[in-house]
Amino acid sequence: MSSLDHHQTSDTDWAAISVVIFGVTAFSISQGLTYPLIALILAERQVSPSLIGFNGTFFAIGVAVSTLLVGPLTSLIKGDRLIVCALVGVSLSLALFARFEALWVWFVARFFLGFCASIIFMVSEAWMNTACPDRIRGRISGLFGFGMCIGFAAGPLAIPLFGLEDGFAFAMLAVYVAFVALVTVLISQKAHTSPESASAGLFLEFIRRAPLLVCMVLVFGFADIAAISGLPVYFTELGYSSSFAAIAVTMLALPTALAQPLFGYLLDRFDRMRVALIAAIIVSVAFLSLPLLSTQVAIFANLAVVGAASFGLYTAALTLLGSRYTGGMLVAGSAAFALAYAAGSAAGTALFGAAMELVSPAAGPVLIGGIVLVFAAVFGYAARRA
Image 1 (cartoon, rainbow, N blue to C red):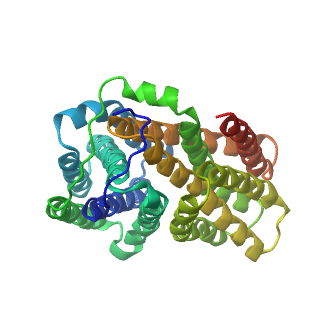
Image 2 (image 1 turned 45 degrees about the vertical axis):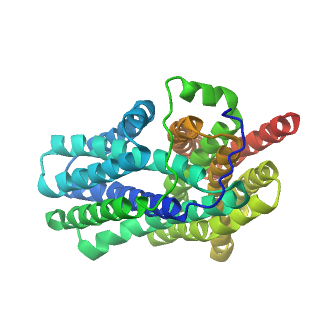
């Protein structure tokens, strides 16, 4: 079957979709909790900020390595079983954080946490697109995004609930992820689809065939992480309180989750490339207009739009991936998306901070908005020619 064939299943594999959304929620809760929790615990132990940051890069290295190995792994292990293995790996990594205090163990555990979490994410994306017919692909992608956003938002709530002491939060999360692995085993037995393997060379082939989709995810990562990591600093530089900055991040996350099912509905009803283009334009306008806003209500409304529209780019890319490709190209596309997101998030964080430091606080959102606007123009031109 050609990789460009439109994939249609005779019916929707709800068992597989349930497994995928349940698994990606566990992945995002793990990431949403561990990023702030590890930083807070290491800071309390008087570990230097540079070492704390270096520990975070081991998660990213694990993600990068997983994108290179996901193809061979899907050839060796059936996709649904690979998700279960990765969930068990996440649970064991979290258990290492709970059991040991040695810093070198935390570096090893952070690497394997990134590796296993990324495997869950990539294989789940591919399986979701295999399991649903094209007529509802946008809505299912929206539910996938909703589960991921809710997980990211819910993860940090475990910190005030379980505290920083004795590794209890890590232990509880390890038990939760192990439970998800068990449920995945039980539900996947009722599934009638499974993610296919990706042969060697498909990763680069996908990037060559679908540069627009890869760029959409890169821009999503660029805008999303620039907002999450840069805007709290932006607001404190303008004189707002740290509590206001924290609420601002919440106003990014919660509306983003709620908007994704609606965004998925729009992707199923209207031209998907056009919906993605409009989302990119909205993101750019929202960033560019942020320095002009002075009231808290206007700022929060603006941030809700930034979060919903930027994540909408990812939902659109995921929907287009499934509507255009099938088989191993779905796994290759998911791996390309993971690398694109990592590259975009790194660039967004660096450029936002540099613009604020070298020019002014307002230069941060203006630069991000300008770059996204340039992407929207190029994207619109390329999509029209295609």
